[in-house]
Length: 217
Image 1 (cartoon, rainbow, N blue to C red):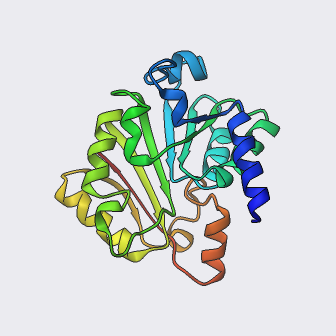
Image 2: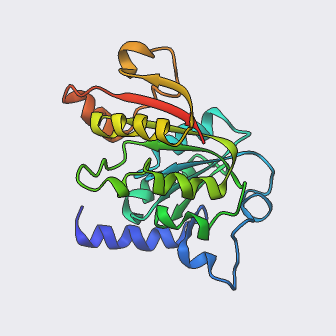
Image 3: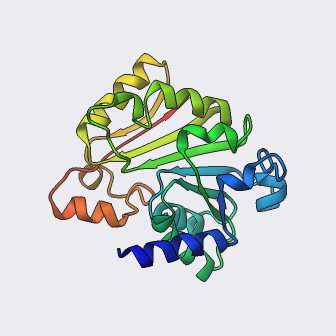
């Protein structure tokens, strides 16, 4: 992507009515805790897609579940532009996007405000365990914004991240819900797990195995 195009997308995202940036949550606007009342204007359950990239999972899930709310979270505006633009074009108002750092979730959500989290092909941070989105550090952040027993999904091509997450689930005494070692061999009838993003299609073309695990905090 050229620099000019990237800057234009950043400018577009700031104008999109379905995108919020961290500046919107400064004290004078105080949107924390008001996703239901002020933004979605309903009490439907909220699902986050963390490190959402182009926001493809949020789009797909919002279409399948019109009575749920979805928020894609990422810090990279030019990628988020694609999902946000598509949501506007399709008139999907049960999906929003938040441009922010994931380890700052507590600045944007209050206790018990989130019901579910999807983490789809995040950076596995092979040399920095603490930065992995399923590390104990992040699970503690999720606990502070999710309802008790909130469900977390991880879909990844990284065996290292998958194995690490399994270990964290055991060590943190989380409830394992489902584990799939090969999504396209063992879970062909699960339409949610089978949603494919741009990056997943690239991984599959390279012959990589896609793994999935879900658990409750």
